[in-house]
Image 1 (tube, one colour):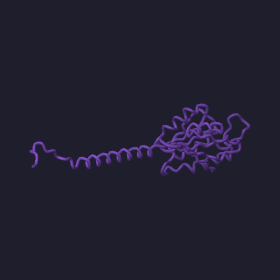
Image 2 (cartoon, rainbow, N blue to C red):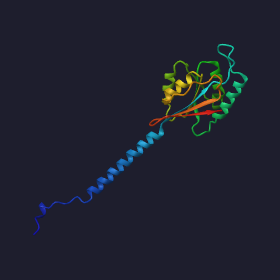
Image 3 (cartoon, rainbow, N blue to C red):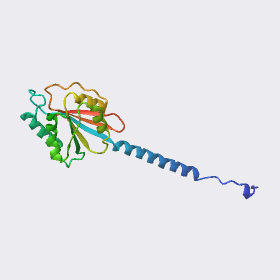
Length: 186
């Protein structure tokens, strides 16, 4: 004999399936949002030493070889149609750094932002907060390059040799994960 209908309880047949489906959808959504957030933000900076300058005076202009190297840099990095194009050019107060940066900035039709070579921490903060704003190029002296790279990527590089004018460093700092530094000769 069956108990009266009032005391019978209905078994929730679809509830476990429905809850499992909802939890799966929520988990997939959270993971997708996290991946999109992590992938979307990276600061990219190209750090370049100024081109050659004669050392006879205190703040020398670029030599002829240095001016040619600045033009080469502009041709290499100055494509306004590239995927992750250069959107900012920074140079320190020295004449040779500004003269190295000017052809690139002129080719991209953007201004050269002047920064003080002694205020590396402020420059590093500016570079780290450029997520999704394109690549920044920094033209500075040999002393500041290791300090900037250390501030951005927490990686130490050896001191720059006096005769080493043809090296540039591509520093990529993702929002999450480890930064990378690639050293190239041009």
